[in-house]
Length: 102
Image (cartoon, rainbow, N blue to C red; front, top):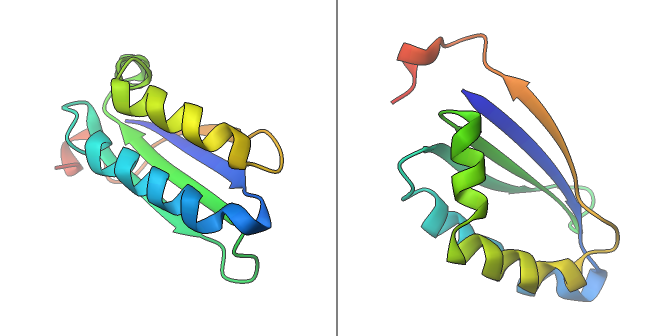
């Protein structure tokens, strides 16, 4: 699995707009064959901070995801809503092993 955690800091007055656009993107993303999970979470003590937890079956699936119309629409929509550029960290799974993912 190819696991990506993306940290996003949104402008105070753009929280709902960001959530709506990201939920639409996530809804479409989980339908992609190479996406195992695509979660949006919000920080409890600072509602302007979000994390996308994206789990792909292979690194190539990330590339395919970034070529979709819904990703391009999301990127175009949310870039101006952010206080700063998003950052990402890439992980690999240890447990469960590859067979443990549905």
